[in-house]
Every structure is written in structure tokens, then in C-alpha cells.
Length: 326
Image (tube, rainbow, N blue to C red; front, side, top):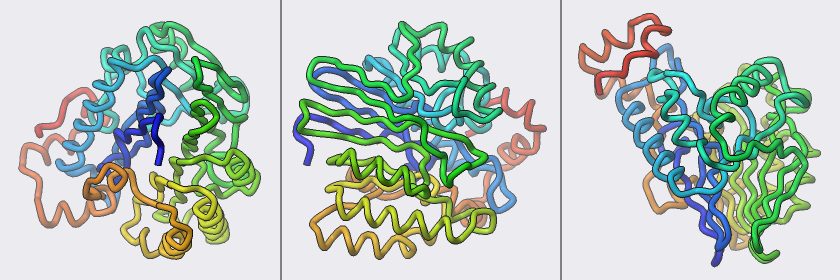
């Protein structure tokens, strides 16, 4: 168990939203990791359910409250469940210019480069981030492969690693290490999706974290992702769980309601070694709230009211400008 480093998950799939936003505090510094939160636009042919919007608002509230008192905000890559854009979108990201300003204004922002090891869409989003929220930051720092010291805390960023499988069309992310005094180490992996890539696994094992916040593979996209890549991811998660005392296993993996059955061999292997593999909700001592994975059930068991249905049928570009009737 960590004694001097505090890890607080703020918005995750097990808390009802797409995100990995985490607050990490050491005696020297407070870091807000990947301050974005989103909902999946369509799942089972359905838009987000009102329950998902309630979770989205709760997640955004927690992020804003945490941002009031942090020194640093990180951006591992430019997907909107990992950074908050400076435009209005109440339909999927619960964001606006004022919300983004509250998160990034006056902060040191460590951001992945938007010029190298990046695909086209994220290059554009990164450029937009620099032109909008980045102008409000106290300091905007490209962090790829660099380390920074704050008292006894060292904040380190990996060189870019693949967002999932090698040469993924989704691009690259940077992983974050928060090391306090050389005795307690937290690793935040973002969207490595397992990892699927063996080179990323070697980096993770070499870092020897005490706690890792790990994004799992997107098994809900099994028809679009090669089964061999998914199997690689689970083998690598098992290897990580064997060597890491605490694994918070989250993100894409939990968008499939059969995730626990798939990962049970990992849980068994970790238990043999006295290690823990948990969701973010379980780490917090809370019940899991898997909403997107059960969206079809939510619509069937709790049909939304008529005013919400009318709102959900507004063309998407107009809908983003109108808050849902929740």
C-alpha cells in the first residue's frame, strides 16, 4: 500500500463514463492526469441514456473540483476522454470554453507533442489545444521522454508508445510516472490497451511501479480488432499483474459486460502472489457502475422521458449546444 502518495480515481468506465482521469498527490505536488471525460455517441444503436448523463455530470464536477487545487495537468494524447476541448459540447463531452479554462488556466500543463509521433486527427486537436486552453496555462511543456523534479517527487514521461497495437491508426500516447523519494511509484499508462505491444510491456515492467493505472484492450470491438492482438493484451496484463502489487485495470476493457470472465485468469494469478487487480470503483471502495456496456438494458428497464427522447433526436451539431433535459 502507498503511504506518501495518494491516488484518487475521478472518472472511469467503472464510474459510468469514458475516461481515466486521476488525481495523484505527493507531499510535493498535486497532479491531475488526463482531465477529460466523455460518453460513447452510439452503442447498441442507441445514444447515451439519462443515467449516463448523470454520471458524465458527476465526473465533470469531480474533475473541476480537483482542478481548483492542483499544480499540474497532463495530456497523454488528444482524444476527448483524455483532454477537455475549448468548445461547447453538452452531448458527449460536457465541455465548454469556460470549463476548459477552469481546468487548465494557471496550471503547468505537460502535454504530448502534437508535432511528432502523432496521427492527423490528433495533430489537429493538439494544435487547437495549444491555441485555446494552452494559452491560459501558466506553462505549456511538451513532455515526451522527459523528466521533471518537484522536491522529492520526480514526474517522468515515456517516449511515445502505441495506442494499442503496433503501428495503430489511433497513434501514440505518453505514459506518466510519479515517483516519490524513490520509494513509491505510480504509473499511468493511458490507452496502451493491455498493452498489446511487447515493447510497451518491457517499458512497464522495467519501471517496476507499486501501482499501475492500466487501460485494457477493447474487447467490445472484437470484430474490428484481431483476436491475436486481444490475446497478446491479456498475456501482457497477466505478466504485469504478476509483478505489480496493485493494478487498477480499466477503460476500453470495461465497455464489454463479459470483461470479468475474460480477465479471470489474471485475477487468479495476481491473487496467488498477494497482488490486487481492481477497477477504479473497487479501488475507491464503491460499487461498479458499468453504464455504456448495459445501455440497451437501461433503455429497456428505464425508458427515458419524452423530452429527453426529443432532445436526443435533434441533429448532433445543434444538440451539442443544448444541455440534455436531465
